[in-house]
Length: 491
Image (cartoon, rainbow, N blue to C red; front, side):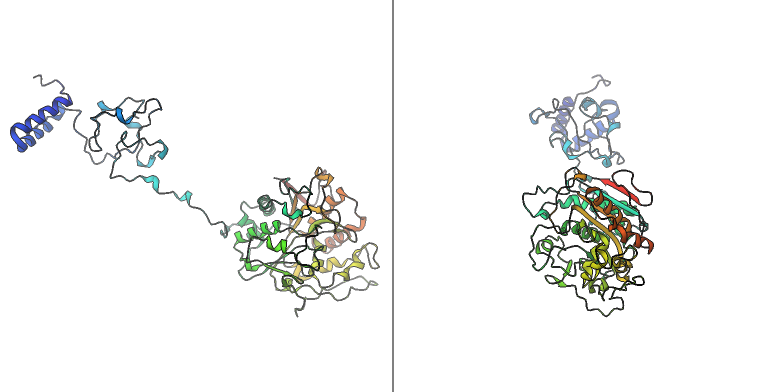
């Protein structure tokens, strides 16, 4: 026998079997040990490498569709997991990656590439790491994430952000209940984008943290909505323009991301009857609603020294009769004002300042002063400025959001399309911490769409002179503004 010749596997098995039959088990062991001692000379391809430093590969075979072996074509001599074949038995490079290409356990392939168990031996003592998700797969709570420690400072005076999306509403006017045709998801995105742009932040939680840096649980946040056309019934469905629940839902959603408790959010119109369809549309059960009759009573009984408005008319002009603000404002720590973009036959425009006539017990006390035809109307005095300067309004207001999703060409009619918005609804929301600047911009949109009295913005001149905010009339459709930082976002 040529001792330099290679012995086939089949020949070796026969020799082993013969040896076992002739000399029994002890002899067989001796012969096997003898073969092991001479492995490098005779059987270099038979014995396993048993170095503990070699990690079993977890890389499955990745044959192409045409080369995948079937179960019946598996060679009968396929080794078990402990009989790994030597390199000479390894399939070609097109069927099995070379050893240098075999990733370690940290490079585990996706399960979709793993062939059947009969095609690839799987080490039984090495767990598959794909069962353990990485930290990036762990969801983050969406309701109350903590804002970062480096939240942006509150936005400065003079910035107005206008967010527009034609997808916000889809009312075809075949039915009067326009409030049922608002896309909540789109409105959520509009509010989120508007507030992040206004505050210069990258997350909704940080935007609200910039607006409410000192909020603590138990501090009430009053949201003033407008229900001028909701009177004397709790199930009003007249179809005239009134507040929508969708922007309020979006605000509540953002406040919750800041960590505000639902019970600290108070939605109110102190002198109107808040309709069922509005309250029932709220997505958050813990929010409180206040009005004149249908919900919790807003009330006007506080003994707070600033419960009455301080009027400061010029010499020769009588002050309006004593007028109180609602107890909701007195108890609140913060105020968010949410007027509707609309014209008003008496005052010319009804925006943020006039929205607070729904915060007082006797709004009629103002009419002779804000109507250009009124007995006490003057370009040098407007009690709307005195109303806003009440400390429970001016010192607590953190944000104004103008609802221009539908808007209205008059305060007591249903919505209708606007020619300046291409024959569609305005589908707009406006955001500012400056109550003067936002009313200026919304006034300009009204003036571009319809006729308004020249005196309609007199109160804004006066508010600017009182140091409340920036006054500038401009052209949001064209030349824009010099003093107001007007930004528009199209979604």
